[in-house]
Length: 490
Image 1 (cartoon, rainbow, N blue to C red):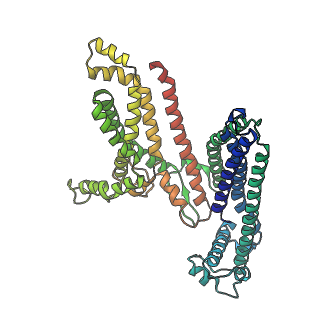
Image 2: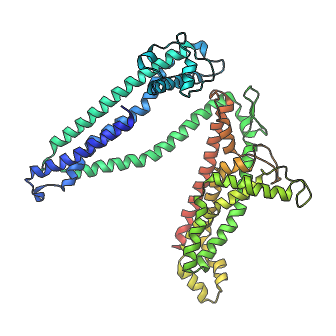
Image 3: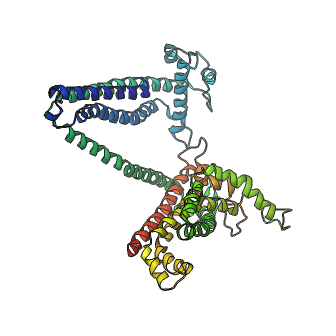
């Protein structure tokens, strides 16, 4: 049974359990709600949750574990001589999964019957032609060992799905029956349901923490594998980024880190003054009607997808800068070779960050007590003097925190840099040169059918871990500044 149908079946059983549990509770009370310990709906929710939650939990665990178990068992069928030297079995298993998916699709579309798929061999039929008819592309010939492994994978997956359907459905029915039998007017349904919901809330809150821990651990493990293959001194202290999948790569993070920080610095030069001045105007000078119109319009910038900003950099900002600084431009000197440059990406990224700075700064400025403004005005200061000498100093810690949060957002940006800054890793102070950043190199190193056992691919995890530590440090620093000094002005 497809997973979607199974989930729908569980929802139907839970709905039926709600109706049955509620009806049984009312029947046990003779129709008098006042004699029930809890409201009737609590009895229905108890039956529904007892039927639904354990079954969904088992389903989720099964869907995560089955592919791992199947791949582990199928990989034992792959001979060692099929794994290319210096590579891993993962590349061969990718072909196995594609062949298995192609056979399933051929059966679903009627090109192949299930018995034929189980008995298919590379000598009896042109497997590549069959898979081509269903749109499955392979990079090499289908060897008999790969086909046998794909057939075994199909068998294990089908058996696993059947067992999963039986087990999950049986668990849901068992939970429904057990909760239904326990339902009576003396049963404390409200207490049970509230404890169950509390457990679900704790699990939901823990998922975010566990996901973060999982991300960090996965990057740590792959980064440790990278440093076993590549010298850490070259990564942290080298001066050249030159990946070469044939060996002899120079994989230093410093040129990428320089490009990342340089582009982010230019973005902050654009976003901080504009965003801060907009926040001061909206909070201190604008009327209610102007503020109600201007602030939502300004915050629309935050909702624009970054790919749109990237297109804006590539098609508008870059060509405009090239007309001014390029060959035959308005200045008559070729300072800019093309439309991509640090300045192009920095300007567009700064436009994207304006609502981050303005919204956070506006909220922080509005949090300054009105009594401080009244006291300054009462002493004879003008409105501008009050803003400069009272409001901004009081709000400065929060504004600094907003700027640091915007900086961490700029450091992690990818699409604008890919389309606006170029792809050259180097050290340069010229903002009209093309450069690249850590995020773009991560995408580049993981793009394509590459071997995850090579340092040229594993370096992406070392770059990601470094970027994670950098942005985490900025976020922690911003929160520290805001929390340490905010209480002085409450």
